[in-house]
Image (cartoon, rainbow, N blue to C red; front, side, top):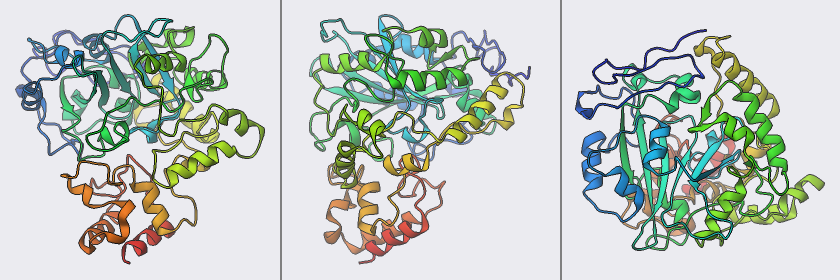
Length: 470
C-alpha cells in the first residue's frame, strides 16, 4: 500500500495527526487557534483570492450579526474547531437526528463535478412524518473536487434563509497545490488546518453567487431552497429504498457503491450507512424538509412524468417543453431526462482508476479525474454546451442568463451585462464581453465561468462574438 504524505504540519499544530492509506479515515485532534502561523496558500482560488481569509474574514463575518443557528454556532466563543467534514456537521448540528440525500445530477454551482461516482451530498434535519417545520434548519451541500462546502441556515427571527460558503485549507495547499487524489478521494474530508467563512453578500460578484439560484425573483426578493426533482420518483436522487424502490436507486446507488467500495465515508456519512439506508437517506426525505419549510413551489420544477416518458420513447415532450424555458434564460437548467448523465465508457474507466489508486494498486499520480463524465447528449441537455448550430443570441441567452439576466444586485459591475437586453447594451460592455469570451479556459475572467459551462465550441463562440459586435 502506498502511503500519503503526512497531513500534519508539525506536532505543535496538529498534535494527534494520524496518517493512513488513501481510503482510510485520517483523524486529527484540535486544530491550532492561531491561523497566523500557517503558510500562505500556494494556489488560492482565482475568484476568491481578492477576498480576506482566515482570521480577518472570520472577524468581519462574525461582526455582522445574523439570526440563524449556524451563524450562532460558527461565531461562538471560543471559535469552534472545524478540522474535517465530521466536525463541521457537528457544529451545524447535523451529527444527530439528520437525514441525507445524494444526487447524480446537479444544476447547482457544482454541476460539472457531479455524477453517480462523485455525487453531490445534502445533509439536513430529519423531519417528522407529519412534516412539521423543524425549530432550527441548517443544511449542508458537499461534493468532492474543490475545498468548499455550501451551507444554508434559516434565520430564527425573520424566517428568511442565509447562505454561506465555507472554504478550507489543508497541508497540500501549502506544499505547491493539491493533486487529484487529495481532491477526489476521502483525503479531502480530513486534515483541515484552517477555514474561511463567507456570507452570500461576500461572494455575490463571483460565480459562487448563491442568489443567482436561490433568489429567482431578483435582488431583494425572498430567497428559497431549491430542489427541482421534488416528487416521486426523485430522478437522480439516491439511495431510495422505502415505499417503492426507484430506478435512480437501482442504477446510481450500485454505481456509487462500486466506486467507493474501499472508502470509509462520503461527505462524513459512512459508506455502510449509505449502502444500508432504508429511510435515513433519500430524495423523499429532502422533499419532506422542503414541504415542511413551505418550499414546495419550485421554479421550473422537474415534472415527475418525465422519467417514464424518457424511458418509453426517444424523447420526453414534457421535458422538451421545460428545456425551452431554460434555453430562453427564464430558469436554471432543467435536470437530465434520464437517470444516468454519464458516458458509460468514461464512468467505467474512472471507476477503475479510482479503485486502483485507493487500494494502492496504482500510484496516486495516475488517478483520472472523476468529474465531467457527461455523455455528449447530457452536456447539451444540461446546458454545459449550447445546442449545435445555435444562434449567437441563443448561445448568450442560455449560457449567461443565470448571472446576467437583470435580476442581480444593480450595484454590481456584472449587472451592466444583461443578456435579456442585448439590443440596448452599451458598446463598451459588449466589447468587454467579447474579450472575456476569448479568455483562456483557466482564467477567472473567462465567460462563461468554467464552473458554469464548458469552453464554447468554435462555431458557437464565433456566433456569440458576432452577435455582440452588432
